[in-house]
Amino acid sequence: MAKIKKYRCLNFGNCEKAGKKEQFEIPEGGEMKCPECGSEMIQEVKSSNGMMIAIIVAAVVALAVAAVALLRSSDKEEKVQEEETTEIVEEATVAAEDSVQAAEAAARQAKEDSIAAAAAAAAAEAEAKAKEDSIKAAEEAAKANGKKPVAPSNYLTNARCEYGLYTGPAVNGKPGGGLGTIKVQGSHSINLNNARKETIDITTGDTILNAKFADGRLVSGLVKFANGQARQFNVGV
Image (cartoon, rainbow, N blue to C red; front, side, top):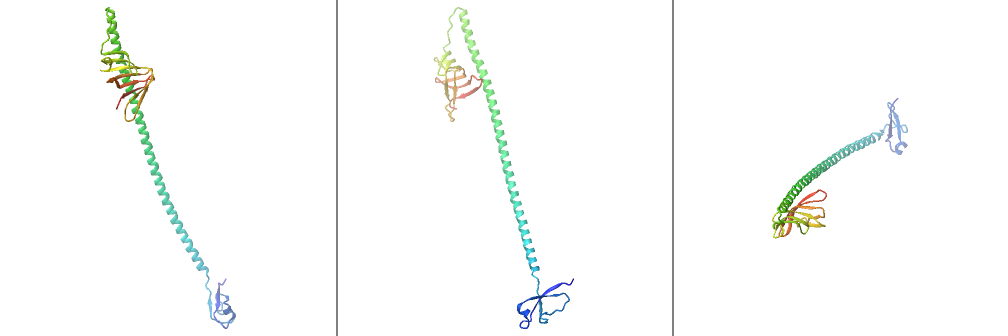
């Protein structure tokens, strides 16, 4: 099938089609003249489809380039965000591990302190009992020999003090000169006079072992609570 092309007549003033700028078709190989006036002054009308296609292709290419750039930018931002998220998670994990390790260390230290305090309490209690037994033995020996037991002037037995009944060394009839034992009676609060403003609450049934006095005031000791727990303390430290 012969290809058909469109033309216009350029015989202005002598041709009606030229004046109206009408287009007409001539098959390929046909006679190249205007069908109205017969003039050979004709011009092929170029199709605008090629330009339109070129424009469309260019637009498609531009859109494709923009899409690729956008995807690359999005991938880059997503990668950066992913890296930042990973870094945050890693930092949080390290912080959590450090916190767990610190808590475990604190728990171990507290356990060790509790064990040490309990051991010290047991030792102090045994020492205090040994002293009491020694004094009782001396008293019984005196009675057996028909003598009246004489309490040493430098030792008190169940003497009342600020926190209960004190047994132990004495100076001028008051607790001091060594380590004694206090059987707590009533409820009291030992002010440690430290920067943390700590106090130790004690009550009937508790015992203060290794009780040390200075100028008639309790300055250190080991509290053995009725529930079996123990706590060492030093006033002013």
